[in-house]
Image 1 (tube, helix red, strand yellow):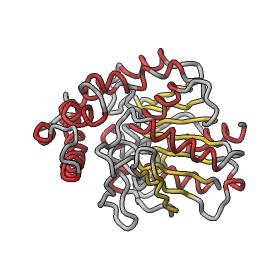
Image 2 (cartoon, rainbow, N blue to C red):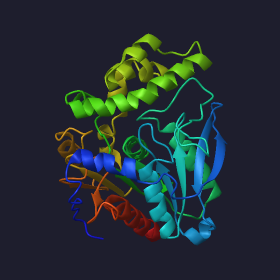
Image 3 (cartoon, one colour):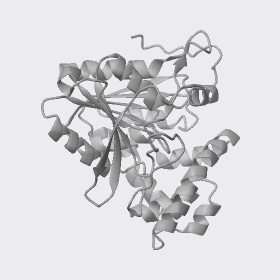
Image 4 (cartoon, rainbow, N blue to C red):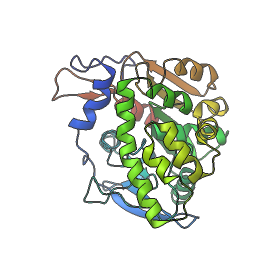
Amino acid sequence: MSLDFSPAWFLRGPHAQTVWGRITRSRRLVRFRREVLGTPDGDELILDHLDHGLTPEQSGVHFVLMHGLEGSSQSVYMQGILSVIARHGHTATAINFRSCAREPNSLVRMIPNKRPRFYHSGETGDFDFVLNTLAARLPRIPIIAFGASLGGNVLLKWLGEHPNQTLVHAAATLSVPYDLGAGATYLEQTAAGRFYVSRFLGTLKKKVERLVQLFPDASVDLEATRRSKTFRQFDDAATAPLHGFADAEDYYTRCSSLHFVHAITTPVLALSAEDDPFVPPSVLPRVKAAASSAVDFRTTPTGGHVGFIAGSTPWACRYWAEELVVEWLRTKGVQA
């Protein structure tokens, strides 16, 4: 597949690339087999398996996928990449982060978790648990991993925390924020950035409200959470105290994948757009300079955030990055 991305003529700007798929694509492109997996701390993770009549042996490789902030296995980009995986005849597992899984027959209602915590950009423990679970079930099948946005940050951080690991044979990421603090500040500076943040905070605040109802002693400043208008304010009030960080800055420093890419030894495709409205332009050169030689770091001038939409007409769009990622990963997996 060509490495040159040319955006659809009717989706030239970064915001059009970012938003188009979310309002036009189906969230039911593939059918799942759902599993509720108990965690070591007494919570549950909802895994959605893509089997489509295949055994793992017939698949040859098995994909493990992680979604972005406030996404789920039903997110349009997850459905898109899973449909490509299915077309190529492979199996996959989509991880729903804690508090993110939707009810099977609803795209709106989320399944609450059983512990006073959520997920965050540096939560690698749950991924590690799922990965080891799948590896035990599929001892002879190469596992390859993908993460979008926040999920990509988690994946890169885990790979950097586990140099020379052998569970994941290859990995790919799309539109990773890389530097969480710089990204949070960047989104505060424009009207479009503040709009994106307000959309995310709308659901995040509801989750905190529900969590406090279920766990009145939870470590969260509910009033400050309600007042928050930026990621930094929300993370100071909720994310940091819930997950053991001193404050938002401590969370950003300890969890930004920028600080882990130097230690990665697993083959990784890291794809980003230079016009990503979530990532300051200065961040991408820093990541490229910091990354180890195992990271195939690629940028395109355009593409937005988890967009990369090509095509000649609005009703015949091609999602270039999804095709590229699956082809790159399956090639690496087959070689394993």
